[in-house]
Length: 136
Image (cartoon, rainbow, N blue to C red):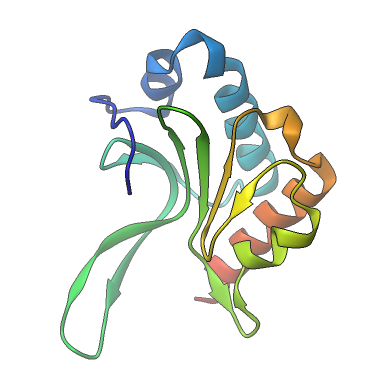
């Protein structure tokens, strides 16, 4: 993941370290996640504001630690990572049709301003990511 990793240790420090023009959007997104995915513990992982830590292990033996949902403030956009999958595939990909002004990949929604996104669809995405995390 490309991004401007922050040298912080708490979600509050992360939000405070974000540039002024994005701080309100990051804080509002953090609150949406806390409200609609409260069961996912917030933490900092590789300089990203993350929620829902989990340990993965592939059949090959490769393993590591990651997160279910993450927020990163990058040079020209905000990334919202929804790394959960369910029986229908990557949760974030289902956001493509309702994304507003965003670029959507398999597990990442990139946008310039939170107001560019449809809030109702965003809340559904966060909830679906949290629900898939509970199952996985």
